[in-house]
Amino acid sequence: MSAQYDSPSSGGASPSVSGHRRALAVVLAAGEGTRMLSRLPKILHKIASRAIVSHVLDAIGAAEVDSIAVVVGPDRQDVAAEVHRAAPGASVHVQSERLGTAHAVLAARPALEAETDDVIIAFGDTPLVQPQTFDRLRAALAEGAAVAVLGFEANDPTGYGRLLLEDGELAAIREHKDATEDERAIRLCNGGIMAIAGAHALSLLERVDNDNAKGEYYLTDVVAHARAAGLRTTALIAGEEELQGINDRAQLAAAEAVIQKRLRLAALRSGVTLIAPETVFFSFDTVLGRDVVVEPHVVFGPGVTVEEGAVVHAFSHLAGAVVRAGADVGPFVRLRPGADVGTGAHVGNFVEIKNAKLGAGVKAGHLSYLGDAEIGAGTNIGAGTITCNYDGFAKHLTRIGEDAFIGSNSSLVAPVTIGDRAYTGSGSVVTREVPDDALALGRAQQVNKEGWAARVRALHASRAKNRS
Ligand code: UD1
Ligand code: MG
Image (cartoon, rainbow, N blue to C red; front, top):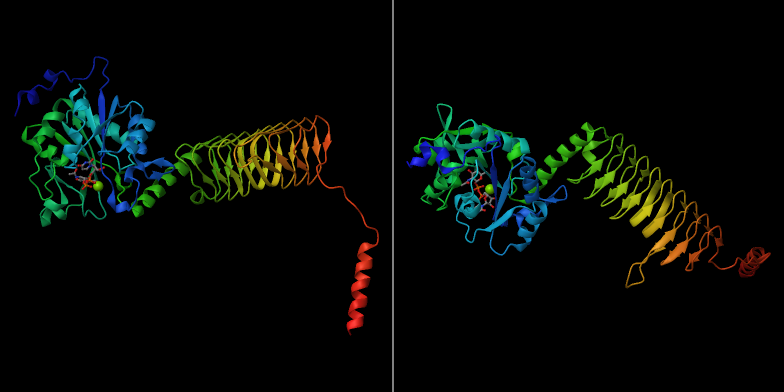
């Protein structure tokens, strides 16, 4: 036992004067996830429109951790880029060979060498952990434990490390492959998330060897090493749902189900009506105001805000869009990135909107494509209106003023501007600017041929008579 175990403060890693305990989180993300059968590394697969690893980083961020170190596999620029997006302050470390979880933590050695009170270790493929759970682990360290481990009662413990208790205290963790028959009967499993007192972290990790069934450096061995050094170790219990990891597509779908359940509950608790919650799918960042009503079978992609009192009717798909207060959209509406539906506006069935701003009170009731457009307040968009925004090379803008009236089945060939209070006749192809208060007619003149139908009918009747 080294002297520093007896006087943890001698290493300088004691709580700061203010009482705030400094924390470093190490996230292990060096696994490839071969069971996903994917070109994409496992932790970049998404649940609720966000990469698995980023959910872990979000939870850690919300737990007020001071620094984050993420361990990635060699040549994983894609993982590093996602980490930088989700947690810009995080340091990224490369584990060049996959020699086990303790070895992976040590890949973040520069981060571990900085003074800290708590070291939290989380797995990048366990995205359902809640921020409060990290706080619980840290509280155990604050109360004097050197190692605190999160355990759960597994329905099927196969494959997990088992928590071995002695007199109610955590004595060791035995990996499934190394466990005896008796130990395998234990259902209390290691959830994989652990906290180690900063003063002891490096020396405990360095004691781990690879003398076991897998020939790996097991992180879980730090428990036995801590006990041998006379340090306190403890296990906290969390729900299996929170600790379930993702190794294959079935577990990916199971995690999606858990996160959707949470997001639906959060929406309901914030004053949103979901008529059939189990049919609505949210993104991690969906923002819904009070008294929003979401009808059944609605899918929210990333970046959607629906303001107070707005209604999203059934079978709609929204991504990167804003629906302002009191507006209603759908059923069967598609709002794509850049769609901005103004206050009190009405967007009806089979309307697709992309990168288009609709002012307050705009009505687009039926069957339209509005892309790359600005539409002034109070304007009515007739059924079947199309903004022809693409010429095969570039996208162009359609500008429509306030209180205008676009006749049904108008094709607005961009770039084009239609003035305030202007009309376009139904079926018009509008290629030139329409001034304020004008009517644009861009269609063939109607010609009536008097008596034509009667003459044709008579001709056919006489031919039929001659044949019989
Ligand atoms: C681990 C635990 C086990 C626990 C289980 C919970 C160990 C030795 N075992 O087992 O007690 O019940 O998680 O899910 O810790 N990783 C690396 N580099 C490596 C090895 C792993 O970054 O060299 C990462 C993986 O990407 C993954 C995590 O560490 O995110 C866990 O590794 P994994 O091989 O899945 O460990 P398990 O066998 O599941
Ligand atoms: Mg695993």
